[in-house]
Image (cartoon, rainbow over the protein chains, first blue to last red):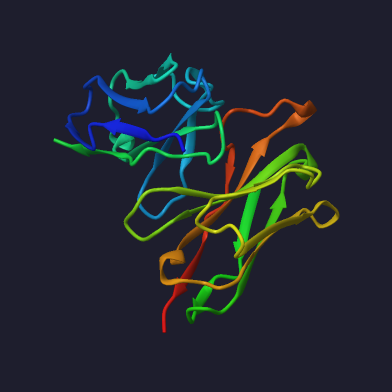
Length: 107
Length: 123
């Protein structure tokens, strides 16, 4: 199985900050990676697919990059509604695995 | 409005069975592969099972293989998960998910998520 390791697991930041979350795969997954945002009591919401394609309706302050084994999610200027947990997922091969999540908290 | 609504969760004793259902609306159901993902309380996401639009391809996580059965009824716009031999570690919120596979080219992401149905396995 392909393991995804996110870093950091916890991140404290302020409104307006630029933040970057990293997702590393245990083997190459081309660009078959998605990023999700999850708020307490809610289902995950798709942000980025195919590593760098912004899902329709998602603000442009979110961006994704990477291929192979290393990927990043960047939020260019944090807004109050962005404080949530972020998770990556690989869709290169079954079983489709998820990262453990990064909880983004208000500083 | 694109929507997935799960039902069928509840409290069940170890070793017993439960059948989850998911009703889809607002999109062309048979353009989508469908999946189940679960999330134990306070923990991360775990992919459980997936089924292609025509049910020809079915896959399971090792943790549920031989115990869970996924199926779909395109005429009813519905997805199902039959769960047998339930164990305490199956306790989780189960999400129904749609993956856009329009024209045979699947998006590399899970587009549409339901709100989940809680399954608790306990004596």
